[in-house]
Image (cartoon, rainbow, N blue to C red; front, side, top):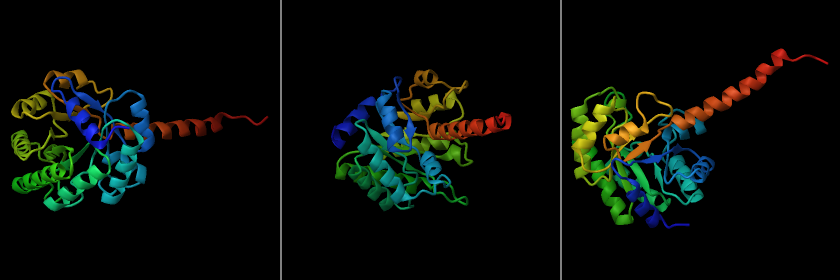
Length: 258
């Protein structure tokens, strides 16, 4: 098995703008092993998938369960694992810093920091505070070892479809030391192109399976360095197993008694 430091180095090298790494988002050791066996070079956890697995809503799993799940996943495979740690389960810069240390101890190669607060009345942190959180995460990761820190600007997922502000946030996060920049929910290829052109660090975007509007090739063509599948695989898995069970039950209606 590779060391955590080896996985971090390998993970960094996979981020090549224009030739992005496809990083499936999984929610268990079993799904992690399946993706590793399928030849994927890196994977990530999904907060939405983990929430489905725990029977709660996205955002309700919490820090302890999220770290424990990520630890088990990282131990199960010999490829880099990056964790979706939402807003680091706390508002303060110290919350972000301590979670990055936990991520390194868990054997992870990467972890994310969001600028979403989780509060409807003020869903996005003020820029200065959001940037300080990213800087604290990066500084803590460097002091504790190393980690690929992904900084996420969540405007488009929280009713703030402001591309200029999103770009400004990503540029501030880049200046604070973030390794990868991510603005989930960008509406189209031109918005993604604008983000890629505005920053120098690798950009991550979401591509959904069988999406006719935006393919992996499309986003690669505008300079994306990483492709996430977000919670789509977990939702697809749950829909598939429910449909399969319903198919079996439906067979009762056509059965005959010998």
